[in-house]
Image (cartoon, rainbow, N blue to C red; front, side, top):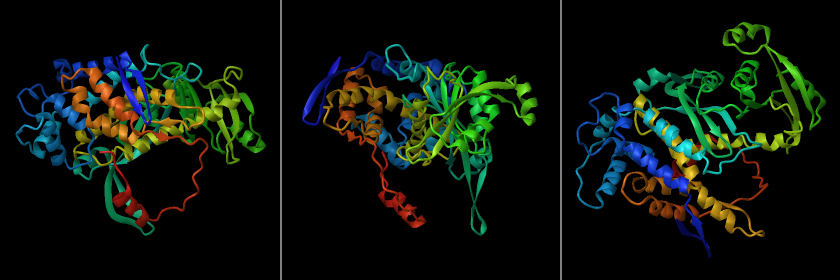
Length: 461
């Protein structure tokens, strides 16, 4: 199938890939599968009576990730389902009771069993660097709804200022997502109390079946310790980790020399205070690591530690570009918290918080794979003298959430819905300005920040 996509004054025809049709059909089938329902309801009797908020409808209601009031969102959702006919009103209390019957694992399974196999399937041309997937491993803190149940589960964060304890507190959690930086895909998402360290949480995620031998992890300085690097190597994966000026002796020596494009392979040994723990975990007590030095555009020296030892296969000059791709992981968290307003949770229970997190990761992955044809059309239509353009992500999320019922619930032919979405995705591209430097801005005051968040900032939906 093909659809004309209007790109300004030019109209081109772009084929809808078969893998997208397969993806949507698999999601539709999974949502209606009685076994899927049975796996992700809390009790066997849940979702057995005929209600307006059925199991698949509730999943799609949460997946829309609205920032409106629950009652207004519910009204618009049911009105969309009724096609303008009169519908039976549903209260927000009914939504709360329905969500208490749903496990957040439903969204994780949709991502794991439907979306990821298509993205990494033979039909989808996913990106690699020298045959490796590049995975960002990092975490971010989330402010959770102020409820006793959530606080008891995730712990409380005490607010302080220059005078000490302010007498206020709020629940806080740590979100860790293993993220494919080249394909913009979240592979594994965990939400734990903020007291759980990001390195300890990342070690837990090393056991995830979504990670594969041969993957290359991009890590910030907080992860550049012997124990964590040995854990990654033990799983058959590689690492490119940024070193601080006080890390390994080999890194300290490169910082002292202050020369770029240096590459040295050395043996690292487990520190004496970590040997017992390494032996208990079965980690190697020594390993070969390559240290490379690079010059940043601002003139600073950066030293990276990597398990990619062959300088001929992995030239030192490439590591500056490769490690810069890790910034996509930072902007991923910015998108979750900013565009999708993840911290504006739609429920005040532990299960509702977990549902919102897993639904946001699923929605982001759908946006990444569904906008690929529109982005390919934009790249194809570009002339040499014009700037490259990319899909407007804010509009893409809005279009995806607005069309979610047509896409995953109604019996509308899949190609027809995908045609409409591709037009919406390609309709308002934004220009990419290479090497653009934003002038240094003054640090905003509390009042300027409050004004931006309250009156200026635009949200998606």
